[in-house]
Every structure is written in C-alpha cells, then in structure tokens.
Amino acid sequence: MQAISKSQLQQWIAQKQNMTLIDVLPKENFQKRHIPGAINIPFKDNANFLKEVAQHVASKDQRIVTYCLNAQCPLSKDAAQKLESAGYTNVQAFEEGVEGWFGKPAGQAAA
Image (cartoon, rainbow, N blue to C red; front, side, top):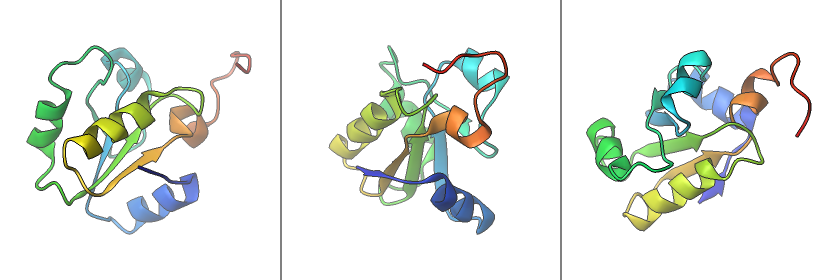
C-alpha cells in the first residue's frame, strides 16, 4: 500500500485520472464533507466492504484511493490493506484525509 500526497491526489483529479476515490468514513461524515468526486463506502464494521467496492470498480487493476478523516485515522490504511489482500493491485491511501484536504473545521482543537 502506497501513501499519496495532497498534491498528487489534486493532480490526478485535475487530470481526470481513471480512479475510484473512496471515503471510508461513516455516511454521516461523508454527508457533511467529502473530497469532490469521492464515493462513500464505510469501512468500519462493514462486512460488505469488499462487495461494495467491487460494485464501483471495473477491475482489480484500476487505481483506488482510500481516505478517512486525518493522518491519525487508521481507516484509510486498513481499507487499502484489505483491498490489496483481496487482490487489488493499484491501491493508495490519502492519509491526510478530509482534514488534510480542506483544513480542520473552525472551532476544533488539534488532536
């Protein structure tokens, strides 16, 4: 599993790269704020995670980028590792997550 930077992800989005960007946070988080173009497939406590990914990804060679809340959140890495274990070959984690993309919401203290 490879971690990618915000600038790399921005470049891929700008170039309209063939990729599936997966927000692995709960639905409530996704509805509040998510990276443009992302789909929501919650990872935690989701027994159907791999099945749901397969519904959105054309092949196991397609680029998949997972992300969660921030660098302290392990879900993006855990989801990426699970995908690799299932045979997906082009998986990256954007470990900075939603907070790295947008910045921390006003009024929230640093963790």
